[in-house]
Length: 354
Image (spheres, helix red, strand yellow):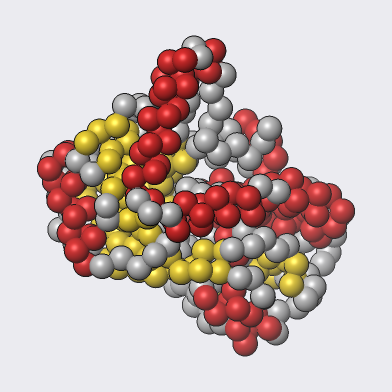
């Protein structure tokens, strides 16, 4: 039996991704009548990008407590901390890595995805979903005040809401993986100012190469050669994509609430966005009940965004920038050798909760 409502208001959410659905679930539990609109024909995001597997740092208990949604069945620890490679050479990581954990999670329309899990929870809370909507500037400009906009990586929406952004370029591929396998590997090298990675979960191996500077076809060829030579991996079909990455944070636009990547709730150095999207959905829901609390939490979670982004952009502008991340890892190994106490004091590379 549904609990008595505290509110009888109608709330519209544009975008049925992680942030949008977390916001919808929280608002429905507060008694709002929530309708989620999405441009795709079904849950799970763009068929161009998903199904996909993502490796991410995670503080499980803190994240479930804050969002009010336990998604522990969607996040599976990697068998070992993700391996780092520079071109075809595996890099020995600092000793403190043995104390860290990383998790894999699936995105997309399959039953094993986090999208499907959130969709099931939202439906139980009587959230209404409307698919096949054109969520372009005209539709969003007409959205009622108080609506939540969480539409992801589209340039025209960034421009509409006044969030500065920059393109990110990439290639993706997928192949079958062994059932029960949960693995991850990060590949840095001469083919990207950012990196490529592979991750496997739920019988699917996913590969991504991305860069915040344009990628040429020979960059993909080099990355494929590295995967083949270093790990014996071969993916038959690669799909190119272009998305957009925020260069600032913003919670409100003309009386509407922004959420997810559109709001800047993403780690800007490495580009981790899964956990930020979940947290952002809760912040967006709070904006309906306590604007003060929402503003405080948003500032807390995004306070380091500008500094990290500036550091990344400075690094990318330097000569030999593709080698500098490798040197940073070597320096961390040296620091652990000089100061063994660092091994026990390790912190996850991305911590949303301190």
